Image 1 (tube, rainbow, N blue to C red):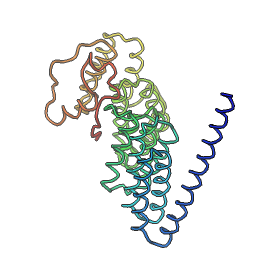
Image 2 (tube, one colour):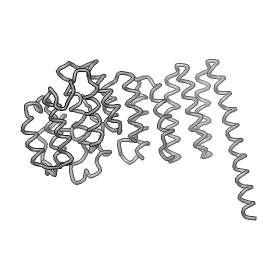
Image 3 (cartoon, rainbow, N blue to C red):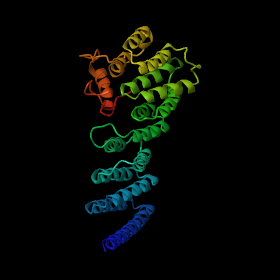
Length: 327
């Protein structure tokens, strides 16, 4: 009897689900017809009305799917403001439904991001909120997969600086390296080819992502047209990075110290390098943290925002830091 009752309940649930999907599809058809006719304002208001109706009935999935399809429809008709508004409602449905992060959802959010006007304030608000949701809303920096998808979109737009930031918080060292090769050849001087990858490697290490640091270095040095086969390399800074990555596995402080001393002329090319290396010394070689940073003001704040809190509270600080301007 119990089994029969359960089977009947399951069948009823399936029928209800089918009716709901059919209802959503009929509503979508009417809304699509309004948009196709150019009744954008009326269609936008109807989407919003239906969103709040579905949400009040706890039909979060239906609300999300309707807003997502509506946003894509408005984007296809050049209605950026309406599309961005519905995109924000997609996020609201995810937040209120407490949906678990899944690749399909992240790809959907990245698609909406890619269609937004790169210069619109709505895009900034959308990406900030999407990253917060993807990180569990706990102040973490966001899901690595979402960062990767955002980085790829920004790379296509040739927004290399912001693309690099998102690559840093993804696990895609190879993608980051390929972007940096293009960035260097398109915007940099030949004398700066080593600077592009050195900064990325040091920042990956500050975020305790040793594997991506290694991949970005190997891929970049193999693929950059202005770097001759190595190691060893013609550029001393590249040799330093190579030795540093090797030294990480041994974890010997004396090796790290001698390495930094021997390559000071190269490391002085960017005043941030020694700050990064102080942090790397703490994370990988047991160096005690400095009581005060040698840099104050804006530079110190930027460094702190990249690296998060000092040890020992930064044991899991990879995701606890805030965005940094990486130029």
